[in-house]
Image (cartoon, rainbow, N blue to C red):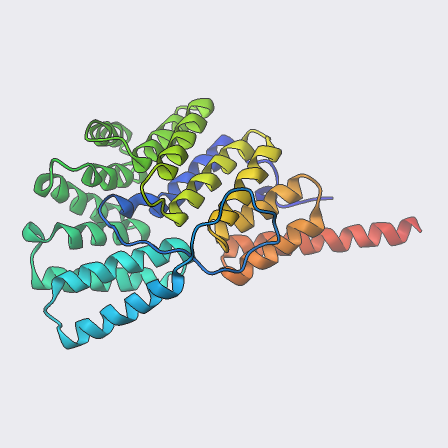
Length: 320
């Protein structure tokens, strides 16, 4: 039975790419204090960790409130900055690219009112939006500016290192992440160091870094549900990459308990179920993931599972 490569054991290179794409998940947290949690529907999985309180509705109400506010007070750059933070959060939580455009618009509107020299929050949001849009050169340019405007903070070096890494400037990226580490350890720092370890082929060190990131996230005074879930998911991806499916599934389930409806963990749970031979369970998980976010990768994996199921049924009929 032939199953899509995405559903089978993935190599270290694929895992490194997964981390690169997912870094937007925690990258804005260094300078934003506005958090929420997601929708409540989830794959049928038993609790593994204590669930966090969901306040997605409150987040959406806050967004509507701020959008109404800025209509009445279009020169209020602080409101635009808060909107940009909320939009980035919803981008991480839902994968809906509409929030990416909204982030960019809010950040640019803020910068049109107060320039970057006195408005680093808007510049940081714009750099993140550019990074998420794969405009890595612009993200690098704005991150470099941030390192000069806010040199004592770690987040500019985080954004800079991310952009440099995507542009293939590894030596400068490593220097940026090391400077980020010197300015203070955090979930973000550990995630970046994990990625560097993977690029060097140091899988065990990468796993340790990701577990450190999870511990730091859980140790925060108010652990952000989406960040904790992301860390669980990444630890699960590390385990999956070396064929430890049991550990991988445990962390995917923990991510879903912490952050119900988290589309990345739902899809990864489907992938690990497929790897363990549970095609019906894998299909159910991917159907749920596609309902949450019709990502082309998820849709392709689901189509592959449907084909595998039809092949299996034909084989069973022939055997009879």
